[in-house]
Amino acid sequence: MSLSRRDLLSAGTVAGTGAALGALAPAAALGAPAGVPHAEAPGAPRVRTGFERLAADGYRALAGQRVGVLTNPTGVTSGVRHIVDVMHADDRVDLVAVFGPEHGFRGTAQAGGSEGRYDDPATGLPVHDTYLKSGRALADIFTAAGVDTVVFDIQDVGARFYTYIWTLYDAMEAAALAGLRFVVLDRPNPTGGRQALGPVLHREFATFVGREPIAQAHGMTVTELARLFNGEFLATPVRLDTVPMSGWRRGDLFDTTGLPWVPPSPNMPTPDTALVYAGTCLFEGTNLSEGRGTTRPFELLGAEGIDGAWAEAANAQGLPGVRFREAYFTPTFSKFQGRTIGGVQLHVHDRNAFDPVQTAIALLVTAKATWNGFAWRADHWIDRLTGSTSVRTLIDADAPPAEIAGAWQDDLTTFRTVRKQYLHYH
Image (cartoon, rainbow, N blue to C red; front, side, top):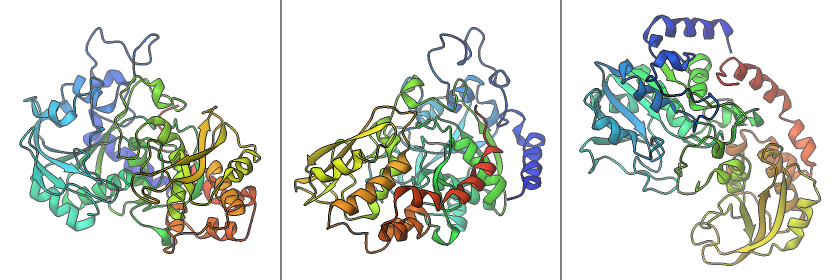
């Protein structure tokens, strides 16, 4: 990972298309209208997203460009209007196409699905499906859509295995192949992002739930990730511009921003879900339910035959910021559909102290110790989620949580050092 390459890329952005939207540009550079308070001023009502700053500047950065927007239902204004509807109605933007990720542009598809190619009934714009498309195939879609600039605006949740950040990565790579410009509009990391946590992906385990070696809880926003991807991982960097937020700080959780929460995917209903997801999504790699099919996905975990012993063992770990309740529930779909199962519910009482990855490892260890039915998925999906075989093999060897976490510390230290170079917010 080369600092000199990063510096060269940063210099190129400033000298090239980055003058209007440079990743480190202050809010004033985007021409906020007179009388509109800076979001960091005392009493300001909310964080201003990248889109709101772009719009406040009259879309100058998109002038003369045929624009395609890669987004989903989370791409909304603070007034809960979708940015595609807003831009389509504004003659200052030549919006010619929309690109949809997993779950689709309008969000109608479940996990592992998309909406396909169609014309959007609200705007008449062609909507192109990007899910599981990358490289030249995705570049050809961008080219066929007739765009000069691809704009990305999707709410992330801060976990390496949440696929939207790899849609971002694939789209940046494809835009570079097609010779297009790429603009990323920022939104908050709902978990705050003070620190990166958990194991770092080993490249031999790269999939769509992790293309490159970043931490399980990366602690970055999408504009910061875009700059990291461009500076460290993409073989051919894209012409990248980023529009940061104003008023957001690294310690801010989503409910402090004043922004509306739109579920980024069907099983991410609240910011509380996002807070635990970077850890408890690991239960997708087991034969336990991760709570899909309930009103508290990733907060409820369980299986047939589990009783109160698991909650008791988990509470005995003394994990910071969280307690566990013995819980019984009946998923309406996914694992154990229509069957009553036992398990735990996570109750996070100190969000600043809570560590989702540490918590999930302790839950895996105690589930295996208290329930003799515990098993990994036969395809070793857990290795794709954690990024190596280490977590699985250490749990199988009955290692304690501290030893399991110790195995990833060197990789995590290296990632934190690289990550620091690309952070914008403090």
